[in-house]
Image (cartoon, rainbow, N blue to C red; front, side, top):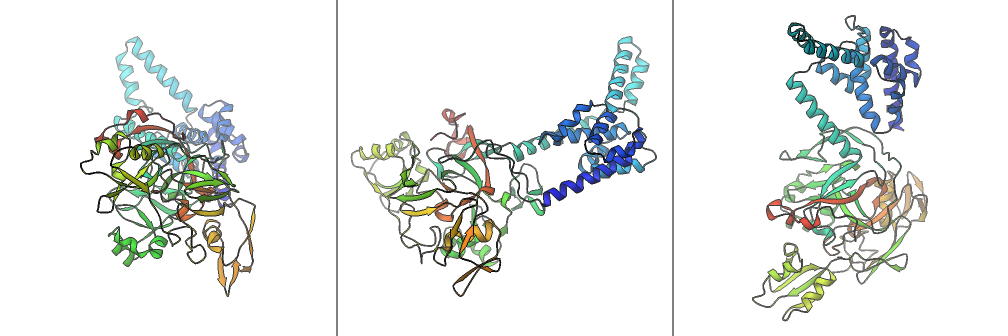
Length: 531
């Protein structure tokens, strides 16, 4: 609703400014207030054909068309300076109203026609050999720009175009962790389409272009929380299906401590204070409550595989995922952690030849090392004399496993989990104090309700209830490296309004995340959606 109000206010202000400006161009003022007709007259004033106004109603394209028409309008009234063009784009109604009231701002004519005519005069003088007239025309050329201005406008346009493409269409993304090994590797650079699952309109509007949420080296956020726009998503090209890889904003990443290693949620540290032993930077941050609160579209980006969509039931039994009671299709290179004992003198080159990520290994300080392996790698190690290999085991329950409620969900692990139902828009569930932890964050945070539990009774927005109807779809996301992925098994559902886009293909791949280690040429242009 706020977005519509903002749009209407902007349009009304623009119409009023056209009403004030049109008479200077010999156009009846009232035409500036008529929707559609005002744009047609605007096109005519600057020398564009009438049909050009239709482009103002084409989503995304209209941003560029509008900017160009605004600049052409001020040039038609003699505004040739860089500041004139900048104000025309950023503060169009204000600039138009200023020109209407400025006695020195007179209508020169259709700027596109005038510029073309001036160019023809230059060519005629040059071809006739009349150097004096040619030099005079060059000296007085109002359309001529200095080298500095040409470079400035080119850089600004390049940044604007890149930011526009990144914001609405395609964004480059790098795999920073091994959670999707061996489907996607650390150091894979992806192009992610924001159109496939519906373009999500910007919510945070005051930001540094081309930066997501942090300014490098300054240790601060790259945006302002206000002003902001409400969530709105354009129509999707396709729906999210089971096993699709997806890029999304980390659902629980709204309040985070940010260290040089990673982001930790305030809730993670509260539930498990021992985390500070793994990241010593957290000690002073936790003591000083030095955390950052982020809006939805500025939460960290994650990439996982969508195992279950809205309305599905999911269960994990002995590491195998089941969707709606049926065995789920497994990624070809799905990995699990194995405890491996290597014989003395074992050549680690054999591990690299098998494609095993030795940097992702975990040692217990003795001879047993934890490696994350797919089925083929595990079988190959079993066939090597002297190598002992067994499945890694994990403790049950605990605050680290969703729904982070060890009192009511005591035996869930990353390998034996559920059953759990994925919320679907319009569906209603019964809620009780026992299962409330499953839906608490959905109701309270993602769908912005006031949730309270008093004397064993549940209150939503002040009304006692034992049921809840979901407002949006949710998804269940897991990494292909099942034992080295922080995913829905730890923090729950991915809301639809957190979906960023669909990975398309790998355009560059650096070994171990660094170009200094070499390039994986066999991965360039490989599809990011392959299993």
